[in-house]
Length: 398
Ligand code: PMT
Image (cartoon, rainbow, N blue to C red):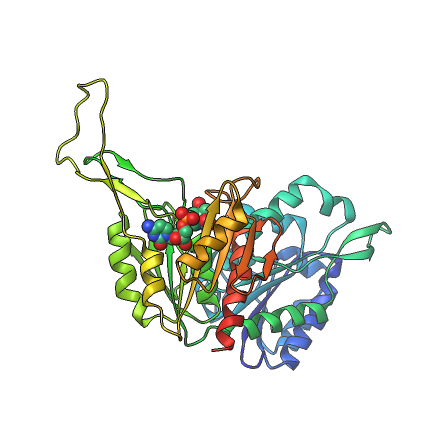
């Protein structure tokens, strides 16, 4: 935690008094702490208390007179933003980008990981609106510090207590520890679909959105890796500044880019849904609707994964993906063997919420020694963290 720059955001909850302990523990652990408060938070704890503990002025207004008054600057300064306690109201504002106080303005500007520790009464916490908002924050890649169970300010007993400051500090410490696990490593990722042109207007493609590979790129960069993302046509893109994106359209272009970047990479993660075939001929002009049928001769595309598997040295790792609809495990194992992957990530279209387009995925990781890890349905961000954990473990043996 030493030297880490942490912004603590405090909102108007009875649990705001715990923010004092949180700030004290962070400063004690060697972090540089700045505190932001919403107007309501000041009804529960004095800015002077938090300013004294953090040894810096507390900010509570978007247009403050102080020297450090730019919310963009604050968002870029931080290594982590932790909002604790987070009320239902500020949660809703963060989830929907309602930027009427400095805390939400900094949240929207921040490029660092964001942690949030909700605090509210049991029924407010259980309410569908609250849970939808939590999901929105998680889908944006933020980290939930789970609520505790116990007696609440109302006297009711149940879920909704803010996590203890010690647990919040432990979560941040674990995050910073894992943040360096890929430091100095180069990671190449293929993602998204490929589009194989029939004519200037039409193409053969598939349903991949690129979300899974983009989440992997952001996660690897967050762990300190230098990431090259070779991305087929996608409406989405990475958030992390440590990711360099190479945009491609066709399997051939993806193949060329992968061959160029693989030799300098420690790890290749191949999450792209590459078209196995392309039209043999591409018309220069838009094809006209004349005949009742239009045969299109297809020829095989290069198999990027198989070629990288052939080129792989003993100092490189390749992680493959398998998208299956039947005989999932045998099919995935066969692909892992054939393409010389170190492990393969299996997702099945038979699992609701898994595979293409969804913000969630449900995977199994198959290792070469027959070890299989099954994971529950999670956000693609959380799935990416599970996959990168496996990569980091294997790399530590190199
Ligand atoms: O992009 P999203 O909407 O988030 O969806 C994510 C995903 C479903 C596309 C992703 O999770 C996934 O499963 N990707 C692999 C899909 C696939 O095409 O698998 P496959 O079983 O056909 O291919 C096996 C492996 O070989 C894959 O690592 C693939 O990238 C690679 N391959 C395949 C063909 C080819 N010509 N070149 C390759 O590199």
